[in-house]
Amino acid sequence: MSGFEGSYLGANDRIGALAVMECKICWTPYDPAVGDDFRQILPGTPFSALPEDWGCPNCGAPKNQFMVLADPEAEAASGEVAERVARLVSDFEDIWHSRMRDVPLVNKSLHVEAVGFRLHEGRPLGVLVAPWFMNLVMLPGPDEDWSALTPGAKEQIAFPSGEYEFIHNVRAMGGGYKACSLFSPMSDFNSQLQAVEVARAVMLALFDEGVRAETDRAADIRALREAELAPPPPPALDPEPSRRAVITAGMAEG
Image (tube, rainbow, N blue to C red; front, side, top):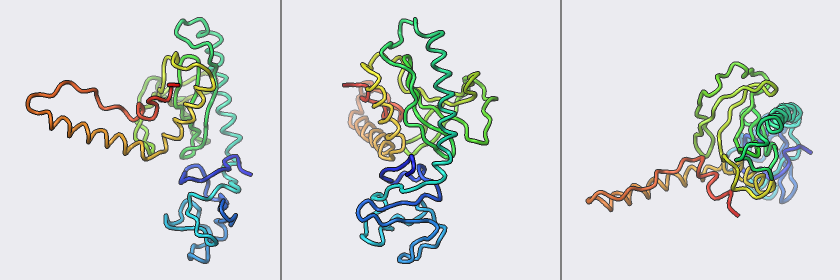
């Protein structure tokens, strides 16, 4: 079984072009090498390229009711992803033990941990939890060299939930990476388990187009409210939340 085994739920970027999928209702497989004669889907068609109205040829279940049976590309990439992520964790563990342990603002109930790393457009992406921050981190792909990144340079990177600002950095052990700050400091977290749960929730929200819709809807509501209040000039309103704030808002509570 693939390390990505589980419900598909529309996450095209989580499966490779060779992924064999299986209906979790009736266990009928979809193999890209075979295609689907019933819907005239040609052999060689990846599951992610199937029409949105495609369903299980046996029971009619929709695409989101399929799960990964085997994914050769993901399995081949998993070792390299693990190696790169391990270097990242080792780098920040060294920072924690050598420079940060006695800093007053750190949360000593936490430790360095990589959470939810997966391939996104060929690059490892996940959340790095540390006693002094929680960052969304992107690492270079197999054929990329980010050692020449300019530390402090900023870049907007798009996801289904919106665009987020990443800052470039380079570490001696782990090399170049791009990071989007989620939480800092980490004083709101009571335990490592709570921080990890929030990190996992962030990874889900990042690929949820509904988060984009919620922020757009919030802007519409705010604009209508401002129109109702003019004239006289309306009182100052809170600025529109960033999408990063939306995917993390309230997640550190409880």
